[in-house]
Length: 262
Length: 262
Image 1 (tube, rainbow over the protein chains, first blue to last red):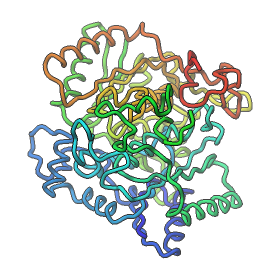
Image 2: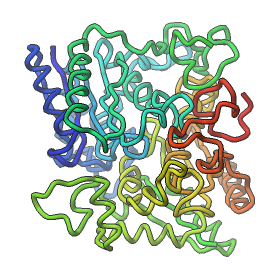
Image 3: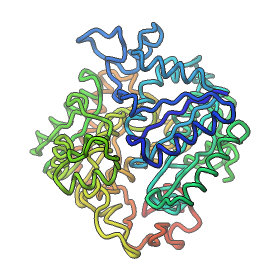
C-alpha cells in the first residue's frame, strides 16, 4: 500500500525526527511505499495568498475560495500545491505527524491544509442541493483512504483526560480529525499520542517505538473512529443538524460519533 | 484604553477588510488607542524555527521551547516577535479577527501565536511545583486584560449549532479561546461570529456592523466566559483534573466553564 507521511517539526534530531525515521522504516520493511512531505525541510510556504493562483492578475481582488476553485479547475495552481495533491491521490493512507503547539498543529502544517485542500479537491465537491450538501464528511476525494495522527505533547496524559484542564484530547483534535480528515472522506483511525515528551529515556523511547510499530502494522485492519456520514440519513438537510431521534437530547462534539452512548 | 487588533486575511477589499476598518474607526471614535497587526500586510513569518533565536548557532540542535526560553530571557528574540510582545503588554484588550479556515485560524495567525507566545512570556511563567502548576489558565502575563474573537465563516449557523454537523462553534473555538487566550491570563469575551459570508448584501452588512459596534462599545463591561482558574482550587494538582465534586460525573470541554450546569 502507499502511505503519505506529512511531517512538521523544525529539528531533525528531535524525538519527532526519530519517530518519523522509524515510521518510514517500519512501513517500508512491511513492503509499503512511503512518500514523506517534511514541511520544514521543504521550506513549505505556509500562508495561502494570491500567488497560489497562477492566473491571478496583479491588483485584482483575491477571493480565497473562488481563486482556489479557478486555479484547481484550470490546472493553474502553484506547483507545490499540485504536487501535494498528487501525493494524496496516490496514497492509500495519510499520516500527519506533529508536536501539539497551542492545542493544535504547527502553523506550517496548518498552511499545508489551507493551501493543498483546494476548492474542487477537498471542498466544494459534489452536488449541493436541498437533499445533498456536497460530498463531505465520509464522502469526497479521499473516500476509501485511511488517515491517522501521530501527536507529541509536553503535558501529562491526565491534563488531556476526560476531566483534564486542557480538555479531552479527542475533543481538542476534533477540528483536525473530523474537520480536516473526515470532511474530505478519510476513514480516521484513533491517534497515536505521546505525552510528557520532556521525560523520555531510552527505555520509554523503545516502548513508544514498539507501541507505534504495532499501530503501523495494524494500519489496514484497525477500526476507524465511527464518525457519522453526512448524507446517509443521520442529518437533516440543509440545516445539517443531527436528527432528533439520534443521541436524543445530547449536544456537543461527541454526538457525531455513531456509537455514542448518551 | 488600548486595543491590539491582530488581523489575518489576504485581501483588503473583503468582508474582513471592511470589518477591520470598522473596528478601528469605532474604537478610535470612542477614544481608545488602537494598534493593528495586519499579518498578511506585514508579511508575517509563520513558521517557528531556529532563526527566531538570534543566538542559535548554525548546526546546533534546535529545541523549540528551550530556544524560545533562552531568546526571551536574553533579549535575543527576532525583532518581529519582540515587537508583537510589546504590543500585547501595551494593550488592555486583544481582538483576533480571522476567517475560519478548516475549523481553525489561518496558518499565518497560528504562526503569530506559535512565535509570539514565547517560553517565559506566555507559558513557563510562575512556580511549577506540587501545589502550583505555573501561572496559567486565568493567571499569567495577560491577567487583567480582555480578549475577543471576530470570526467569519461561509457555513450556516445551524451547521455550528449544538447538534450541527461541524460541531458547536464554542467547542470548535475552545482550543483558541481556552487554550490560547485563557491560558496566558486573558478574560475571554464571547466571540462575535458572522455566518454565511457568501450571502451578505448591503442591508445585512449594516446589521452586522451595528451588532459588532455594540459589542465593541461593550468591550469593557461585557461578562467574560467563566472559564475556571487553574490555581483557585477547582483542579487537583498536579493531575490537573477537575475535582470530583464539581460538575460531577460530567466530562468534556464544557466542564471548564464555571457555571456549567451538568
